[in-house]
Image (cartoon, rainbow over the protein chains, first blue to last red):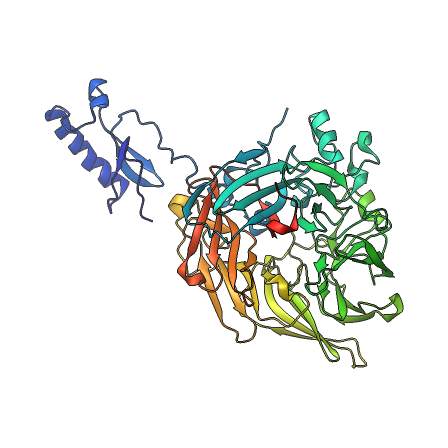
Length: 99
Length: 486
């Protein structure tokens, strides 16, 4: 899997590490950003005084620059077949002749 | 109150769409060939209201007809409900009044005796008219320009069967249509009426006969001399209907029968051949070679439909619900009732295969159908985790050499039934393949157009719809001259 997320509100971090290690790293990074006066954060977030937070999507960590910790939602339509992924072969065939 | 929230299979891309649509001058990626003038007409189903039970069949979905209209490289799209008496009754009541698939005993008493057909299987252009077909009822005539429903059609009163197949065959040499109805005299009857209708739409011949047991006769084979009638596995009874079950169940003890009758023969001339458990739901083509009749089709090992479950209570077996392109040969000079079967390609495919229809009933070489190639990439992140469970390729299968070529739709797409469109005056297989792809990443449908002789080169054009088109059962290309298009 090679995620590429919506760049408007967040950026991807595809680290090869555990959540625990990543959280430790992000805590350090957040402290550094605070010391630097949040330089580099998006303007809207800076005006609202929000700080970057770590969030996860599909078990992949990323920095949520909005600072709101609102869960990431894929663009409309993305993964629109996922709703059928858990279905058994029998249930899948009940949908229609053609998927 | 309309509520689909408790329908586990009607979510995301597979949720009902429920709207009628007009899109003028559709967005196109690539270039639509200017020699494509006519329409790609699709018929399928959508749920106006949820079914009364999750045990019902998708074959109970309300009919929805839609058309990609091609004119000089420009494509318009139109989609309309097929407005049957059932559709109007449900809409007036604001709920589903009709029960399980072909079981009127499960209907609301208020609709007793009403035509319960949903007209969701095959579009047909014949004798200057456009029809929708559903095998449990008469054809419905549709206005080819507005796609509005006109009503049922019985060929000037000469077509006596109560039902009409979803797979009539039009002889490319004479223009005659060979068609039939099974359960022709009512529910649970073993009567089949077989008709010849000339190209002006007049019934010229009727043959009445009985099948070995009441079963689904969804499709037939046609040669220049014979009609081939597969009967297999699905059984029904009044007891089933009284128990509140769907019309069909699967009986694995029932042999597959194949009836062969001369096109000018009588009921006494039908010869029934018998084989092991199989399901020949759709045929590709057939021909008569001397004393041999050859049928080619993508045939399932067993029951392909879990919503028509085994009658012995055993679970439906997905491992046997795979179709392979096979050749059945019937020796009319033999003394026994057996026939031979040959598997022509190793991979399982969609049984919704097509040929160059100019070669129907004649010797031919190419078959086209969709299949799933697990070696091709599937982008689970963009599309959802359906890897290995979608048809991502169209294949051209060369029945003479065993070779195949394939078109890959993309890493977020699944392909519906393919259609072959011949190029004017072209040789067999020269033309385009066409079919609708579901784009799970963009939540939209795309009409694929590719050169049938160069599938591996990808598509020539994609007609983009900004929404999901209703899932197709069958689609047909109709040339400009076949219908009174505006």
